[in-house]
Image 1 (cartoon, helix red, strand yellow):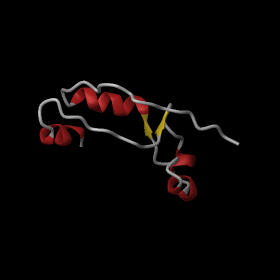
Image 2 (cartoon, rainbow, N blue to C red):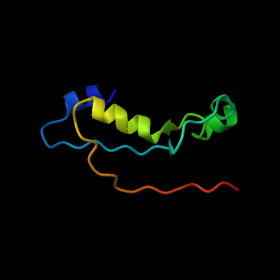
Image 3 (cartoon, rainbow, N blue to C red):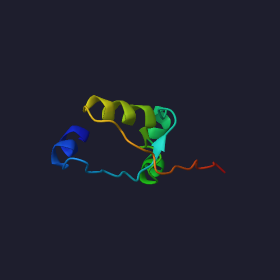
Amino acid sequence: MLAQAQALLKPGGELYFSDVYAERRAPSAVRDDSVLYGECLGGALYWNDFLQDGRGCGRGMGVVRGSRTLKQG
């Protein structure tokens, strides 16, 4: 998907993502839970996989504009 988005960007163009990312891969019990999936936690993309996908498309990932950690409980 990132490679396809890159093809659409003009030189110097930017692409922003606003999504839930995880600091580690979610266990299957979390991924398979329909409530957690509906809350965007079960389907959260592992951050390092996202970065690797970006590097694989031949363009740097740029800058992280902001992030915050969600606390459980």
